[in-house]
Every structure is written in structure tokens, then in C-alpha cells.
Length: 532
Image 1: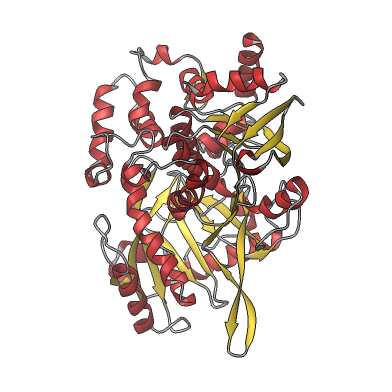
Image 2: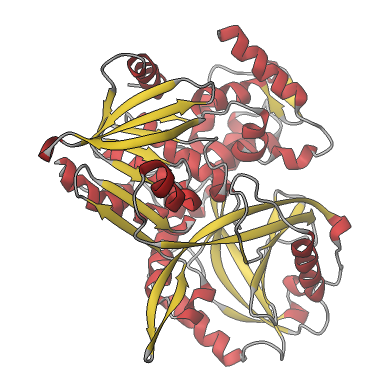
């Protein structure tokens, strides 16, 4: 059954006396909710995912775009988290080689930083905490003789290089949701869970939830379990919607990034160790730009209106200018974004006392006093698949589901470029796949085929089915964006607005900052009216 068909059934049943019934109701369309929905649907469970906004509208599209083990976490002795993340790094690269790419990082070094021997030891540990098949190990660099040294100030003579990976973060969320829908899940964006209560007695208990769509319609859902994957809202959802106490405390930490015109013309990224102890990355971004971030600030404002401050902009500009020959200031920033990370606060023993410590790891709490409630606290993009797998290991037995875990050996939609199963070849030979696609679709501009390959992988063949000329793509609604792609995104990826398309399904908005996207939105509105 397609996601569209299931959504129609939910709408019809929501207004009747008998509520729609599912096994798992997931609240939250970020990376954790998406991963759990995919895993659960693949085990044969009836799943409904609801998200109050668009998919990946908040934290999951506001990351530094990295799939990484977390080199800096070694300083905090989080060896278990780093190992888990390093293992997942290669699993994810194989499953989605179109949206996840290897990236080589350079760490410039000077006398004001940690001793070189300590950095070498940390990188040796980083290389050997987990099996590594796809990425080269660390090395010491003479920056005066290396291409990555040319944009840097002359006093940085030595550096270190190591490997991690880069990801299209919001597309990772969408691909997980696509896979969930193709395995039978119902997906409802712009739909808020406004209340949920346990009903029934003994083994027949269930959750009765009220959902509200953006146009005010109320839907009643009967679910055998409830998953709270609302990210920064996890505690407030428990308190305000479920009227439950929270087992964990979350510290909300804002991370902001700036984007400037390209500061260097090579494919390396940089990791800078600032004297205040913070780590900031400078990453080649969307061909023409450099992404710089992140900040790390306590946050107590509205979670729906998170924005960078002038002080954060100045901080990131000053830090970058400390390293690069080309200095930058606030006037050079052409775009910025901010997100709030929900970090789990743990109580740890420190000698005779106890203190609170923040971890980047996640915590899963199952309340099985009645219909199961699974709360997801914390987490990071790199470990989302493992989080989902562990979530189902906790939840599935309470639903009588004995299906095995499966996602480690399955491609995400579009990742099956050479075979149906994840393989190293897909990562290593992705440039060759792009060339094959450019030959197959020689009637399209090569740069457009390359973008399609990196966005959609093998699913680009669905987008381009029965099209044989540029005229078959329809009108160009924005630079490089044709009707055919917009229709694909609306039909298969839950895109409903120009912002969804230009800033989350793609980053095309970055290349058209002086245009409003009004023509695209008008076309979308006309399409919706035509279907009404």
C-alpha cells in the first residue's frame, strides 16, 4: 500500500466513530523519528509518523552536515560513543553513497594548542577504535607543501589530516521516511499531536491520540504504542501533551553556522581548535561556498524561532580570520542557520560529589506501565540508525513482534546504484556512476545530472522516466529547477512549499538568494488548487 493511499484511509477514518488503528505512533519527523519509523515499518509493524512542520524542519537540517565519530569527544573519554559512531559512519556511507561522501579534514597546529604528541595519539585512537574499510587514516602534514596550507596564514606550518564524511542532512531524514512509507508507514506532515492518553485495561491498553492538521482538522488515532521522538521538544511534549514526568533532563544547546563565499579552492575541510577550547569547522559547501560552524550556547528561547545572534556571527568570523589569509567579517556572511541540540544531562560521580555532565550520546526510556511509551532523549545524526535499532529492540517485544533487525544491510532509497545491498564499491566508484548517468542523459546539462545523482541516486531514473529532452522537464520554475523535479518532490517526498524544496529537499535557495521563490510557490499553489 502506498503512503498516499494510507494517508487517505487515516483521514477518512479519523472523522468516523472508529479511530484509525496502528501499532506505533511516532511523534517527530526529525532524524530519530524517521529512523524509528523506517525500522519499525520494515519489521511489519503498522506505523504512523506525525510531524508538526515539514520533515527535518529543525535540528536535523541545522547540523554541521557531518557523519563522524566525533574526534573531540575523545577528550571527554566518551570512547563508547566514538566507537559506535565510527562503526555507523561506514554503515551509513554504504547505505547512501549518493548523499554521504568521504571528506578529508586538516587540523592546523601551532604552539598555543594541545601538544602535537597528544593530537597524534588521539588520531591513532580515532583510526583504530573501529574497523575502517573506506577511509584513509591520519597523517602529519607540512602545510607549506600541501594544497590545504595555501589559504592559511603563514605561521601555521604543521598540521594533521584525518577522514570523516559529509552528508545532506535533511535529505537523510527524507530518505528514511520514504523507505518507511514504501514499507507501509503512514506519514503526516504539518500534523501536530495535541493529546494522547492511555485507555483500556491490562494487556488491551492502548494510546488514544488526537492529531490536528494544519487546516484544523482533528484525527483520532488508536495506537498500541507511542514514541516520543520530538527532539528538543521531548520533555515539553511529555509535560504538556502527555502530562507525564520526564525521566531525563535535557540541556538545550544552540549551534549556529554561517555561510560565506568560497574561501579556498580544494576539496579538504578544516577543523580549528580555538584557544577557548571550542572546535569549529570550515567545510566546502554547495560548490561556491564555505560553511563555518558551530557555536555552542545555552538556549532558552522559542524552539520555533531559533536564529543566530550578531555576537555569534562575529565570533565565527573572527575565528576563521585567525586561520585564513582572507579575513571575513559580518558583511561577508550571505546566509546563516541555527539549531538546538537536546543534550542529555547525566549525574556522574566526581570524587565524593556528584555533578551534572552533558553527553552527545542518546538515552532511550521505555515506560511499559500500560501501553508502551518510548521516550528518545538526545542523539546525533551519525548514530540515528543504531538508536532506531535499539529502540525497536526495546519496543517490539511489547508488541509481539519478533522480526530481526535489518537496516544495517539495507540501502536507503537511491543508494542501490550498483546492487540492491550496501557495498564499498558504491562509495568508491560513485564518480564513475555520475559519469554513466551523464552519458545516459546526455540531453541534460552535465552539472544538472550530477546534482540529480547526488540528491536522488538511483531514484533519478524515476524522476526522469519517459523524458527524452529538456523540453520534457517542463518549465524552469527557479534557476536549475524544472517542473519535473518539483512534481517528483511533491509526489514522493512530501514537499508542499517553496521553502521545503529550496532549503530542505535541496539547497538551491542558496544559489538564488536575490530571488524570492515566489514563482515556484505560485506554481505549487496553482497545482494544489487544481487538485482540490
